[in-house]
Amino acid sequence: MVFLSPGNRRQGVSRSEMTQEFKRAVWTGSGYLQLKNMTRNSLEYSFIEATVSGRTQYAQTVMACAKDKPTAKLISDPCTNFLAENSKARIQWKLEKDLADFETRAATWDTNHLP
Image (cartoon, rainbow, N blue to C red; front, side):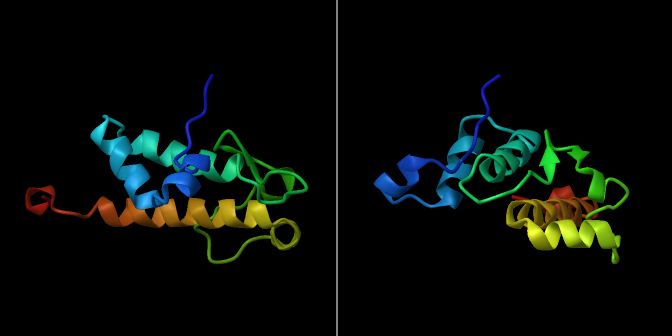
C-alpha cells in the first residue's frame, strides 16, 4: 500500500503551498475521503516528534484515549496527559476534531448554492 501525502520535499523546492497541492489533488480526481486521508498521512509521516502515535490507521486510538472522542468538551485525565506529552498525537487529535466540526457544518450546506 502506498500512502499519499500532500506535504513532501517538492513543496520546499518549488515553493508551492499546501493549498496548491490540494487543488492539484482535486484536479486529478481525488475526492473528499482521499483528501482527508492525505491530510492524516501528512501528519502521520511528518517529522513531528512523537513517543508513540496517537492514532494508527485513522481509527485506532492509543489506550489512554480509547474512550474519548476529539469532539467531546472534556476528555479523560489519561488522554489529557498523553496528549500533553505527545505533540504529534495532540496535533492529530486537533485534526480529527477539526474534520468532525467541518463535516458537521458541511452537512447543513445547501449544495444548490455551491460553485
